[in-house]
Image (cartoon, rainbow, N blue to C red):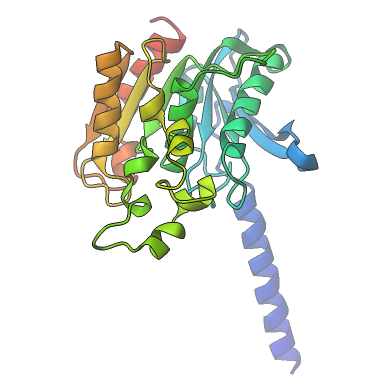
Length: 293
């Protein structure tokens, strides 16, 4: 009995420690300093937090890359931050939590805007360049940053939430044409009504088409959009690559600065997005858009 109790307690302790380890987030590189769990907004009295990673040796005003995690607008966390390697090249990286489903649109984009405004207002405190802020994200996060880069900023903003560049990793660009949102031979209305897109908008896209357009980068494109680097796997089973191709083509037609990089053999994320070749394309893009190199 004592042996069983000891084993049970040991297992419980290990599970607890494992869970705590997961909450700690990524390993911080030697060249970076982490400032975690910074409250950037408090909608409805609930704190929203971000983690900030800054270069240890950099003393000037650091350009900022804001990461917005994916997860279908209902999962994920700021601990799933990507592109920390940018810190070694003189960029600060911020990663945010935002309101998830069942919170409905526009809560998610409002939180992203609040994070941009917070970083801009507190740039001096953290040694940041508040005039050079980019946003990047994957999947649902890619969708959100793409809207950030195309949608007009709110007219009542005292501090601007406009971003200077966007890295869109395989984000849904047009909610009206995303397969899970569309009734078809393989998808019933009941199934569509239970899709993440319907839960995000509070109804199916065919019931709220104008709201779906408002929440889609494709329908907000204009010539003065932020520069875009769109990356998408050509074998993505979750978000069709056509979503990014259509967005890119519409931006070109509008005269907006845009670059499309198809990752050969890649699905919905994965190691193909973490290669030196991909990293170089990203670094060149941010050196040009945030540092003017």
